Image (cartoon, rainbow, N blue to C red; front, side, top):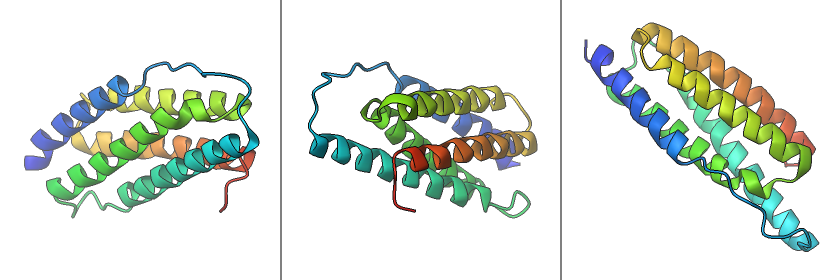
Length: 148
């Protein structure tokens, strides 16, 4: 029964932190050197990999056997990785930046919609949102020529 109380609270807190962590940021210039652009792409690629790892860990949870602590830890890890990616979005250029912003925004909206759902539905909603996010991240990794 602790799942029914803890998970909605965790999801609400995660949603709030993700929304708070995603402000618009402006690019400081258009004359960045190639090494800076490469470094920025590498940082975004690392953040994408971190989100994908956290998403995999979350999806591997078995709702029938996972403890509230395990679910909380998986959601927290996912939240931190998405927040890190949100901060790095401005470092991606062109279409990759647009795709990342859209993917993160969509994920946040779906996460927010899960807050008032029953626990089993929350896990399903977050799982579906992660599937969409992971698909977008895979496409962005290709655009940025990230290592597999």
